[in-house]
Image 1 (cartoon, helix red, strand yellow):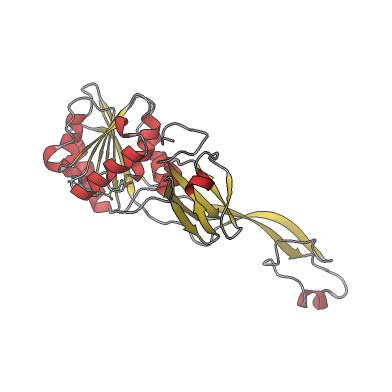
Image 2 (cartoon, rainbow, N blue to C red):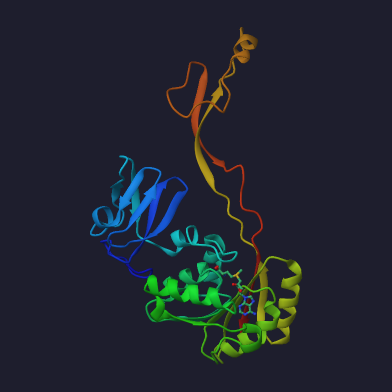
Length: 301
Ligand SMILES: C[S@@+](CC[C@H](N)C(=O)[O-])C[C@H]1O[C@@H](n2cnc3c(N)ncnc32)[C@H](O)[C@@H]1O
């Protein structure tokens, strides 16, 4: 298994995602002789995982079952151990498109953080691109490298443990794109300029606060970047629900019927009772993720 190439069978040393039900998953490092506890009982790695197909339904010791999924950057993002605040797939999708990333792209990133964005970048630029990622917190840099090795993407990435605002990316005129997710991105804009190819490239900076955006935009203009614009992307998800509504009786007996009419929160199963219209509807979730951050994009010409 690797995060950039699909394999059919689960092997010793792989990372797999154990899927227990809607919104309930966790990652597991498969180890011969290892065991993983779930609410449905134990999964024994040698007997239940190694040699099985990714996607298989695995029965646990108490008789319940789980699915074992091949890892992807999207699944990793919602299952990874957090060492920092991370970027989620909605922001990542826009970043990938607006930075014009593709197989073979050379990308500079800082900070590496928990590696959520890094995994997505690596999947997009494989098999011939390269990611230079800079993280000034030593343990985070080491942990990220360990994960890249375990996920068999370390040949595509160089992790540097340094301050990007002081020492830059360690790359000169080689990058197609630069991404910044640090508290003071305006201090790294000059280094981003130096890292991007002489013939040009794209930049993105993620910041939660508008004051950070203002300072970054000023720095981008001072360094000659063009097409500077800031976007925010918000995700609206929908549940599919069966809705029951009373059919109004506009004639005799309307008042009596209205008193015991079922509500639209009625059960999701079974045929509707008489006098009730039933239909399926897409219903927005009651809660949605609000602001994550502003994404400022710019072009070096
Ligand atoms: C919010 S996290 C990045 C999360 C990452 N985008 C992800 O998706 O997992 C910010 C990281 O930048 C690092 N950082 C902050 N300032 C830095 C600097 N000047 N140079 C290098 N790394 C820095 C922090 O240590 C932290 O790990």
